[in-house]
Length: 308
Ligand SMILES: NC(=O)c1ccc[n+]([C@@H]2O[C@H](COP(=O)([O-])OP(=O)(O)OC[C@H]3O[C@@H](n4cnc5c(N)ncnc54)[C@H](OP(=O)(O)O)[C@@H]3O)[C@@H](O)[C@H]2O)c1
Image (tube, rainbow, N blue to C red):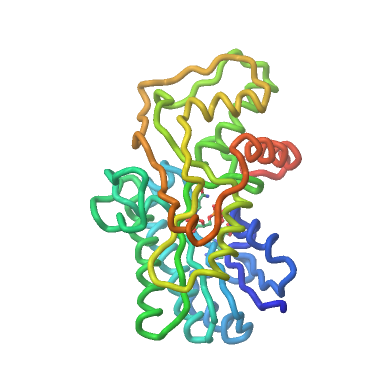
């Protein structure tokens, strides 16, 4: 049976992948120009009129370290407004199920690795993205509070670093994996001898292909009906050096990689414990190699229109 589903943020990395997976349903999609999710009265009218039965809350202000560090007010304000407007009006209009998307930066800076759902609020946050993290933690608490007080079936998931088609490939303002794809691509086409990357390359990070993430979201929407969050990741990490070497090989850049060790490395390791979602019956499928190849192909096919 087809459902009436609102995918908030359907043009973004995650929202577009979720929309693709749900294409057999009646999808409600609104661009920011059609519905600014920060405007309470507009969101209220939208829910009263459309009455979706399910909501995927994948709209948010998202960015890399620099943006998070320098625009804290925008990150906390916009994310709180968007999620409060959607969650509250989803409750008021009788939405049957809502999935809120957070981020792994909600876990404490010095969290034991791999990070489990029970580690939430056990220590201090990383200062560079604490405003964003606080908004996301508030989102989890909002879903749980509406469940407790009103019986709303609102759930939360925390994905690891995501990548894939429709990513932000901006050279300064994006996440590490798409930024590296762009850098190596430019170095290749401009016949550069070397590419300089930040840090020592030794930190370890986890990366999940966005189609796997979308599949996990649809899976949780069908199977998970409890309070508390669910981590979504691969459960495996690689060093930034390994990542850079894989991307260099896939792109075919033959020059050297220079590590600028005067630049900060960040946290040595950030890996999610994914036992909870694995036990529920979901596992990531796409290898990092396959995922990078698909992302690079999308980057090449869409080079004229990407954010750069
Ligand atoms: N990307 C990652 O690595 C990652 C990792 C962990 C968690 N997440 C979470 O996943 C979710 C989605 O992230 P993403 O990477 O898909 O982000 P994204 O590509 O930047 O997409 C966000 C979407 O939200 C929309 N949006 C933002 N503000 C809006 C507003 N005021 N009104 C209407 N629409 C608005 C954007 O619209 P426009 O197209 O008009 O800008 C965009 O389509 C976020 O909650 C994020 O925290 C992402």
